[in-house]
Image (cartoon, rainbow, N blue to C red):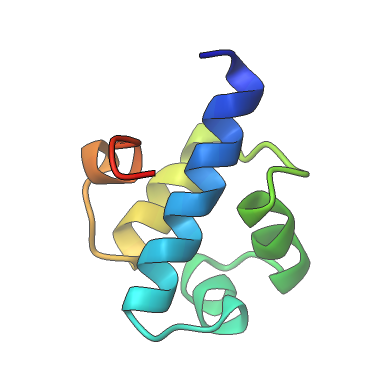
Amino acid sequence: MNKDDVYKKLGLNIKKYRTLRKLTQENLADKVNRSVNLIGKVEVAFNKPSFGTIIDIANALDITLKELFDFEEL
């Protein structure tokens, strides 16, 4: 798996967990103190988030980094 694939799958997982928690992109952006634009671009792998942003997103979604990077179900 190349790094672009990782970012695509990461974005899909962020969207999956965000929607499971009934959060909008705006809600998640508020929780992680980032822009809605950034969240949208991360979900479609247009932007590559920093590790700090990834940690903040996992915390906001109340999941572990392991869950966020679990691509088995995708």
